[in-house]
Image 1 (tube, one colour):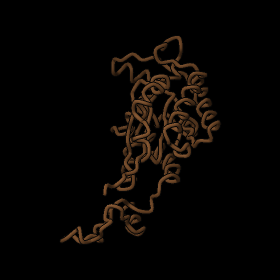
Image 2 (tube, rainbow, N blue to C red):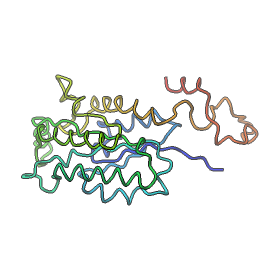
Image 3 (cartoon, helix red, strand yellow):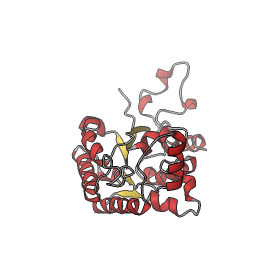
Image 4 (cartoon, rainbow, N blue to C red):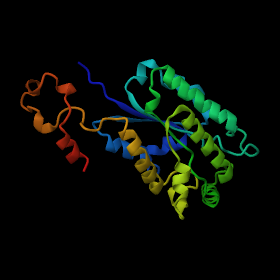
Length: 251
């Protein structure tokens, strides 16, 4: 008999694509926390907006592979909120942004994902001077953004979550609480090491409400007959560790 391994899905733009990287490693932190409990799957697409993600979502997730997903985190809006005048290829209007989020949530439910398993995360803040410095140092040219406009997309994301009664994290607000909030951004836009730790600690309690972390998949090594493993337990693949081992494991 095969073992079903639960999954946490991170879906979105470059904030997700970088989530296992050297700076924005909040996805890697989640993967470490949920070892032998749940796999963390990153499906991040740098430069994508809700418009493009709405198109690709059904090609990545469908009834056959959604049943073992225990938490689905959506992180979109950083690119959508680019200015219309200097970034027409990225800009998505506020109305369409909300409509695209609506459509993706409706689609996930239509293929069998309970909306209680969905977590939305707003775009983070933007630090203009830091971003322009990064562009100059790397020789790259990207359209600048505006925190006033970004805040409007944050509000649209929050309203969408409220409309669907879905858990949401206001990353923009949480980062801006700090007087030195630029420390959360490595290049003025993407999460730094500090930013990743903040995102992780905000996400963790919401995910732990959705996933049973009282036991690791497969038994603790002391519970196995290592000479004849097959004799240890006929249902070895379905046995979970006692709580005491999980607590030791996660210390």
